[in-house]
Length: 337
Image (cartoon, rainbow, N blue to C red; front, top):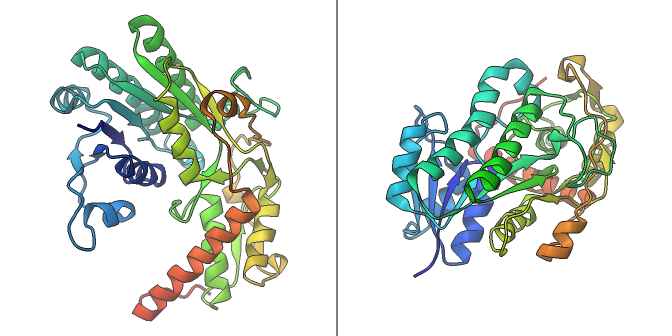
């Protein structure tokens, strides 16, 4: 009988790619979905509602990282071999506007899940989605030994989740690991995240549906990778004999300005004609440069990035152009002037 896994945040970018990966490896996949008035499953509909028959190996459950009792009961019922905690309020800028909510879901949510695993007595392995934002103001390149200096409520909540995971590993012997993932993007990235905001705007400007793209700090430097590759690293961490923490990154950096240049060029556009600076998108405290050193992941996991950020920018622009063309053929696209 194949393995089973529980994914929190399964409807997000990473959750959808991870579900695909695990299903391809023969897993029974269980996904945690928050109860709401809308059913936000677009990223996994091709799995959950397949073209002929839905994949019966994917099952969704209504539960929430704020409900520790529900987590204990679900874990006892499912007894998964692996747990991937990808659920979070994950937008850095939004975390300044909703710091308490971010701390509760992103930080305390990790603790509730770890405690639910301990309390339920389920023998499982858990992956905690940590973030390069934990490094914040620490000078690059950043690796597993770099001290944390978060610069946002999101970053501080992730630091709490990181050390809670380490504590449960050391105190209770859980097979618990932290994946410190640097920025990773794809056509499934949420539209409010800067890379997707850029690629989507390029497609709309190319089609004549809007004129300008408003952005904040163009000089911020990031290490961007391709999300489908990064979920492979998550899985590899839980296949090791012993639990350890790993940085996952490309080691190649680009500024937001450079990403904009490549993205607009992919559509034959001059970015300078369309991009405008808007101070409302600046953070109260900025993170200047995040560049990861993934030597440990390469050595122990055999993981290497294949897609670099210039190719990633082109992939995202081409995907958004295709998506927009399909939307236009349906006649339901807004024009911004």
